[in-house]
Amino acid sequence: MGMIQSQRTPGEFAGAGIGIRVAVYPENGEPEITEVSAASPSSATVKFTRLIMEKVEGSGGKAPAEAVREIVENLVHAEYRGVVVSVLDGGDSVRISDKGPGIENKSRAMEFGFSGAQVEIMQDIRGVGAGLGIARAAAEKAGGTVTIEDNIGGGTVATISVAGTGQIPDTPAPSETKAAPRKYLDGVPRMNISERQQKVLITVLECGEIGPSTVAESLEISVSTAYRDLSVLEEHGLVAGEESGKRVVTPLGRDLIEAIVGTWVK
Image (cartoon, rainbow, N blue to C red; front, side, top):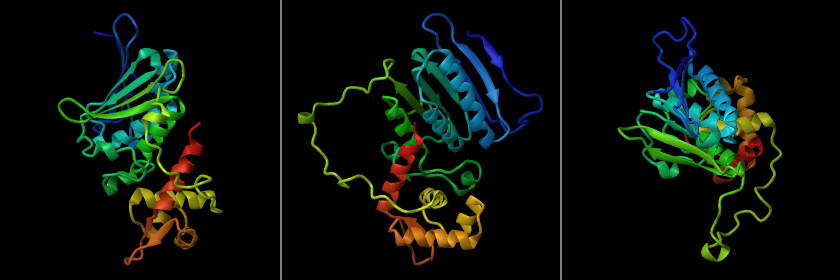
């Protein structure tokens, strides 16, 4: 049995139950296991990611922090049940498992905008619908991958893996693959929208369909500002109006969000 180090703060998180175990597996010997807890989902993301990255970097690994953070944030869907994080391969692999309800449609889980989240979850984390896509983008930029699998006995296992050399994994030769037609000849068209309007666009994606009042509440801006921003996005063809008066993101809007997220990942 490996050594267990507790990082619980006295009086913190009484009854809320947000806690995880982080196990670091050395090349030889027993794993080092650390328990850590947090007071709320928002603080959990920061605290848990910091600890995991300390273990990754302490092992000399290259698992990207952005990918780790997004998957840790996604644990809110599992209500942090039975979370075990394993740092493997000298920190080049991080496996995050939970005992939550699992992901029914794993083939779509990393698509931007795909989410089965409940409305109440939106109050606890930055947003849903982009997190696993961001994790995948971060891993790919580091020359690695993210895989999503069912956990034994229920729940989900997400694994971030990068090659120890930092090289991008081998891909089939061009002759072995069918080239997909290019959607945009020169990349996603540039849009003259502000940083705030980008956030509004991402909020629309994350919520599925949304009106100005919900945008205003989510981003802490006035309803009139939210209405103007949604109108600008609609003029650019990035969102479309529904009969209900709410907006939904268009395919072009989804593509632009993916391009924007790509610039966040370093």
